[in-house]
Image (cartoon, rainbow, N blue to C red; front, side):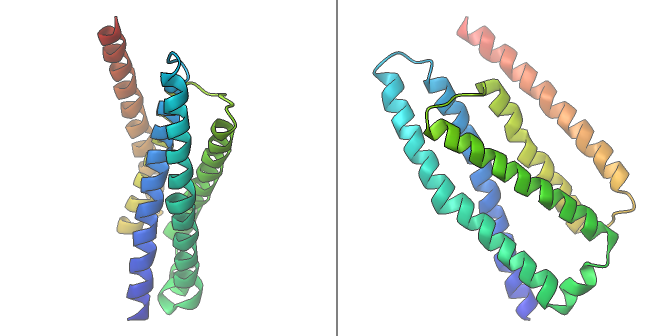
Length: 183
């Protein structure tokens, strides 16, 4: 019974963590594009995007990441079900993707700090592509958790690569349409 409550809380905070990651990168795109606007529009937009990003990052995304992690560790190390899962190969692969998610989160934090300090080191197109990183990790983790099969993880990796290619093609198509409409 306790396990299901912990699992539910973990899932809720994973969802809000991903929501924060998806939206923060969109704010990065808007912030970078606002930098090319004329004054005073540029200053007004950048000030607003900084405030929105700050609130999202520190009120939703970071707390969600911490709470999702706490409930995950609780499930894995302090419940019988979690202890059993630690012996399963699919869980090892899943934890590898979770490690990548932490790295992705930390890179987003670095980009967040740069933009808060008016340092623009990436293009909006880079950010649009970067935004797909969380999507790929989400797909991988959900399929591993639902299927609980690490033996066929190679098929999953091939599927993720194909999914990534489709995302990139969609991005290029979107970029062409956007360029055509701006002409």
